[in-house]
Picture (cartoon, rainbow, N blue to C red):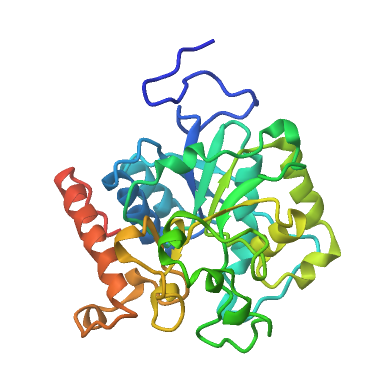
Length: 330
């Protein structure tokens, strides 16, 4: 048996036949299918390092990811690993403004990465503001429970307030049905604990998922992808997980997947605390890196000032990269 490294990871070969992209047995992963999200991925990786994480980020790429994207990852030494592009047998037609949900099925891939002991899947439009390595040790069911336990994975709740009032969202997506609304009365507790996994509409947000990979759990997911019910899932991966493991997941506090809209006045500003946020999620468009110079230099309000946080980290990343001779425009 190989000796463990000081950081708690092991250089021993994983029990599965698949090689790891990095020696670490515990990893952050993020899905990348095209270069539209590449600036987000690179800054996410940098933010993890700036926050002092001892675990590497592995880019999970599909065959659609182009050569220039690979070059950008390689020159920065970001580990990468090819994954299949997952889709259900019965394809769900998403609204044009929500076309990102086609990619979201592939965010279920980490459940099958049995070469690792622990995977924390992150969306590429996230920014880590404080170290959150403790997620690598959140108590979860072991693979031997085969998805039948009460702690199959961990995630924060989906916010179902629909603050932009998107007409094609389900009618029950409203503040009264949001799990986070139940936490307004105790802001201090909201920083430390998530609402019950059965609260509100009881749906996890797929932006951050803490997973103990398991062949049996992944098989359950693949079987679910083959069922016609997927045609009725409005939110792809998170709809499937809430159906497949109802209430049998660990609800993390919002600070690990702090959706930028939750900070808005009248959404969940009742408990939002900037200083407590560990991981900010820039869901919806435009993304910070899609802003023009004019917009970035304009007057900021409570809804857009969080983009400045991303640009500050991105600027630090670019400066450090140039110091290492990396200046490729990404």
